[in-house]
Length: 244
Image (cartoon, rainbow, N blue to C red; front, side, top):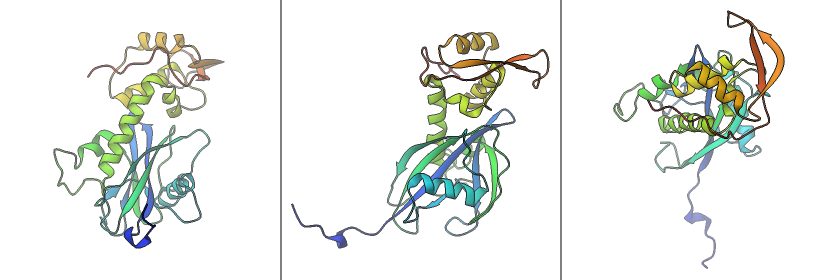
C-alpha cells in the first residue's frame, strides 16, 4: 500500500441542503429561497449551506433552516437524511459534497428570509419541478445548482414512504381527522381518493391511528372523530399509490 499523500487529494467542502415539505392550501409545497449572493445570485434554491467545523450534519441542517428562513425545527417535525450528492461540477466555486435532508412538518408558517437568502417562499412542488426540468433545462427560473434533482428525489421519497409507513401523519397536527389525513395523501400523491375506502383502510390498519375520544367541527359539517398517530411505523397492508 502506497503512503498517504495529502497533496493527491484536492480540498473540498461539505454542505447540507434541505428539502422542506408541508401541505398548504391542499397542495404539497416545498420551501425555496432566492439567493442573495453568487453563484446563481437571484435564482431560487433549496435552503442550505456549508457545514462548520464544530457541528455535525443535523446541527448544520437546523442552523441553516433557521438562518435562511426563520423557521426552527419543531418537536413534531420529521427529519431524515435523503442522499449525498457529489458531482465534481455541481458547484462552480469548488468541489462540494452535499448531504441533503428531508424535513416534513404540518402547517409550517410563512418563512422569513435571512443569512444569504434574499427572500423565501413556499411553492407547490409541481410548479418548482416544472421549472427548469428535463423539458426546459435552460430556463432562468430553474433551481440553482443541482437542486432540481435533489427536490425531485425528496418528493419521490415522501410519496413512496407514505405508501408503506405512517409518515403521512408527520404532515398532520397532533390530533387530526381521517378526512384531514386523506387530504394529506391527496396532496402528496396529487390524486383524489375515495373517502369511504380510505377511511376503511386507515382505521383497519393495526397501530396506524388511535382514537383520542374527542371530536371536531373545524372542517364544517357534523362532528368528526379525532385521532393521533399510533405506534406502527410500517403499514400492513400498505397504502398503495393509485395509478394516474
